[in-house]
Image: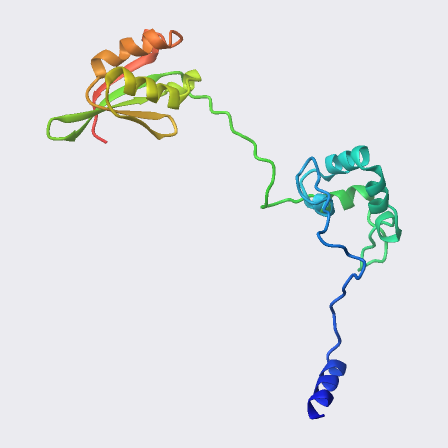
Length: 199
């Protein structure tokens, strides 16, 4: 008897904040947006919610109508300090994310001179590696070039940096002719042999 009084007393003292929807059926069916690939409730938090709204209106007009119709959705949000509704442009600015997060990534185009540099780097005692830099400035796929060099010279080759291929062995004499033969857009003036260079 004492336990039932304690349980009832604890229920009365703590208000329950949980809300359960009894009409929910499992498994839940969630509608994902075709633009941002998130559930449609979260589209407003993406960088371009207008595209998501347009996609939802075009593909699922009934869902779009239920999401936009209603007192909270149609009425503009009021500013708490003044009690007035902010202008439409100002409301759009507040929704857009200004810093951090998953924004649109703009790739910077680098305007590097088109030049291939070849250098011989000492490794151990009388062993060397050949470094080829600048192949990407001619829009040459580095992985493809690395495989070609490894097959042509029967040695190991690897892409080590953003625009650098390391070939195991000293092939500085042969590599200029091989590059011009395989990729004719690389002419003789755009290839520079730096000789022996220390890392």
